[in-house]
Image (cartoon, rainbow over all chains, first blue to last red; front, side, top):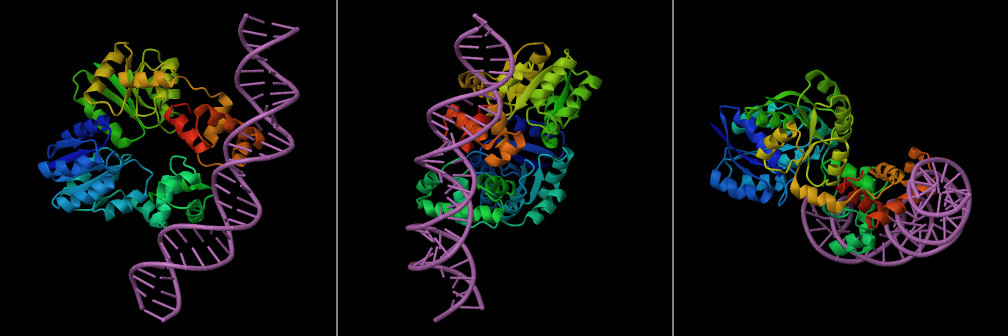
Length: 201
Length: 201
DNA sequence: GCCGGATCGTGACAACTGTCATGGCGCACC
DNA sequence: GGTGCGCCATGACAGTTGTCACGATCCGGC
C-alpha cells in the first residue's frame, strides 16, 4: 500500500483528489494539508511514501516545501502537481528534489500511475512539459533582478519598490530595464508576464 | 438520481470531481467537457439535471455558457464553481441565470449538498462570499472603460490599445484615467488587479 | 424639449518610466 | 593579479503615462 499526503490550498480540489485516489486499491490518502508550512510537520508525523504537492500555496510555496521534505524525510518522495503553463516550475521543482511533476491538465488516470512510479523511486515528468521547459531554458535573471520584478508584481511604482528593497530609485529603474531587455519585452508588465509564464519568479 | 455534467478546463480536477461525486449514491456524472463552447451541445445531448461549471475556461467563459444553457435548456440548472477571490463573479453568475455558486476553497462535502439543492431548484450561495460580494457592489465601470482595461491586460501600451479598439490615444488615456480614479488606485496595473479581484472584467 | 450619461476627441502639463553611459565595490576563477 | 560578473549608485535624456479642462455627438428618460 502506498501512503499519500495531499497538499493543496483548495479544499474542494483536495477532497476531489482524495476521492479520485481512493478508487485505487494500492493507494491510501493518509492526510491532507492546505498550507505549505504544514507539510513538513505532517510528513514527520505520518511518514507518507509520497507527498502530492501543489506549487501555489499560502505559507511557503510547494517548491520550498519540497526541498524541506527532502531534507527532513528522505524516504518520502515528492510529486509536484500544478496548473499548466508555468513551465519554469519544472526545473525548480527538480532542483528542490521533487521526483515527479504532473500538470493539472493531464488526464485523470495519469495521476495514480505517476504516484506509483514516484513511490518506486522513478522520475516522472509530463513529456510535453519537459520539452517546453528545456526550450524555455533556465532563468537569465540575477537574484536582484528577480527581487525587483517580484516587488513590481502588484503595480508598485519605482519609488515603492526602492523603499521596500532599500535601493535608490535609479537602481530599481536599471534593474527593471535589464529585465525588460532580457525578456525581450517593452515594459515591466510584459516582462512580468513573460517571467511568470517561464516560471522565473 | 441526479445527473451532472462537469465543465472544467483542467483534466485532473475534472476527473477528481467526478470521483468525488461518484461516492454519492444519488448523483451520477453523465459527461465532462473541457471548453466553454462544448457545454451547450453536450447539454442538448445529455439533458443533465445540473451543470457544474468553472468560470475560467477556453472557448467562452463559464458565465456566458451559463446564460446559453439557461436559454436553450431551461430544465437544466447551473452550479458555478470557481477559485476563491473573484467575488464579482457571483453577481454576474446570478445575472447569467446560475442557480448556485460555490468556491473551490469550500469543504468537499459541501459540493454534493450544493448539487442536490440546485437540482431541487433552490438557490445556493456560499454565505461568506455573498457578504463580500454585496460589500463590493456592482461594477462602476462603463462598457468602454471595461474594454480598454481588458485590452491593457497583457501589458499593451496606449498606442496598442488605441489601435486595437480603433480609438485615439488621448481617448484611451482618458478612459484609463477614469478607471484608475474609480478604483482608487495609482496606475493601470493596480486598477487591473482591483477590477479583476472584484470580478469587473 | 431639456437633462444626464456614455462615448469620443483635442491639447497641454506634470509625473513616471525606460535607456544609456559611467563609476565604485566585492567576490570567484584561472 | 587580472578579468568577469553581480551589485549599487548617479545623472541626463527621451518616451510613455496620468491628469485636467474643454467640447462634440448620440441616446434615453421625464
